[in-house]
Length: 379
Image: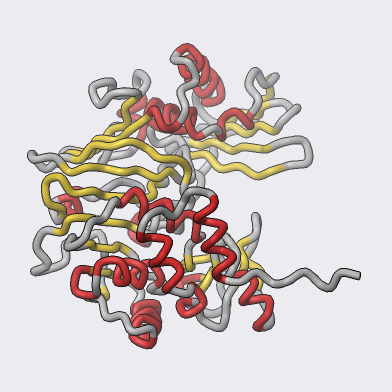
């Protein structure tokens, strides 16, 4: 008679990441040497699709920590009595492994981390490179203090700073690598100027039409940065980059038959393409028993909502759903390229998404740039 299933352990988690090809070379040894549990506070939550659920009891908490799941460590920026929105976490270990692999660090290189969080990524970098080469900035002073304590108790002393990671670290000089562990709406050019030519930036981006994608940029000699998207990545946004999910909707609803399954809008390749063609259009979704329901809005009050197998409802001026359908047919004509065929270029004047080659910039659809309200980017 078999007993109860054995609770997962941290070595089990590391072995699984290695078996999946996410930990290669020295990173396997580094992850083995830095237990995740040292960087998770007593009060934690599990992120569900519609809420954060408190994790009660040491065994349940340890089981979550030793799984390939994010561990929510703060709600509502630490305020009491809020709606229960996750605002800080210990990231999903497989995502951490992916990002550190893309960072491609070498011995002797200086790294700047934007978003210290619990300190777990800082500890991994310290183990790999040495304390003096690791710099990490955190905006929330309470989170920063908890991370500093956890790092010190584990024997790591990177350079830590409390401040806004969007702005340069005074006196830091140039670093070789920069990693952001919070989602950015755009890559601040001021951050690129802290990375030496040839250096690498790895960051999750979250724009209006897509909830998260990982980008790997290489800084050029002229100060620009260019690189590919590397799959999906959902992170909590940098506080200065937070925006409401949807715009205010105006006008009465108008129904019509759906010519496009709304689930197709969630494909990351299409989302990257549509985000560049329709700047300023915001999209959110929820899963339903039949598929998904999506809502899209624009700053001028136009909107549309569609659910799998049901009619489309449009609101306000214009015909937003028709624009989305037109964008889908363009994407189909382009061969439905996967997300890894897209990339990003960042300059002092803004940033733009391209397809297959940096010279093939995806321009906004006619009239969209003026309506979008975006000032920092054209794609």
